[in-house]
Length: 95
Image 1: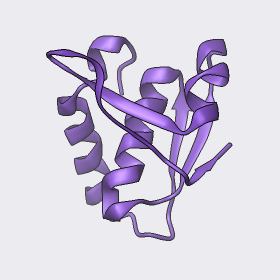
Image 2 (image 1 turned 180 degrees about the horizontal axis):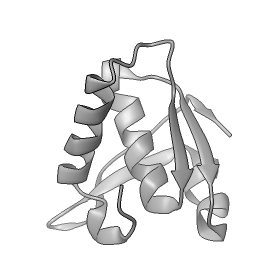
Image 3 (image 1 turned 90 degrees about the vertical axis):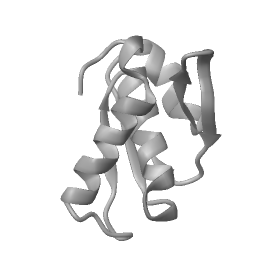
């Protein structure tokens, strides 16, 4: 997936969920978020809502992602009205 805050959107989330469903992931599978904060937020949100939640493995590759998004289990996507307005906390993070 492309990096950059402009890609942290419902459209990108929909594309990711389509990819995950086409890959036929099951509850015993996990999503691996290899990248910076945008990748972690999108992958975390998708993992939290797909099949009502599947495990997520965070592998942050930027300093900010290592400190911020991968540590707290928070995830979200931006809406036209503002940043991270569609968001949630996840409790199945493995790092």
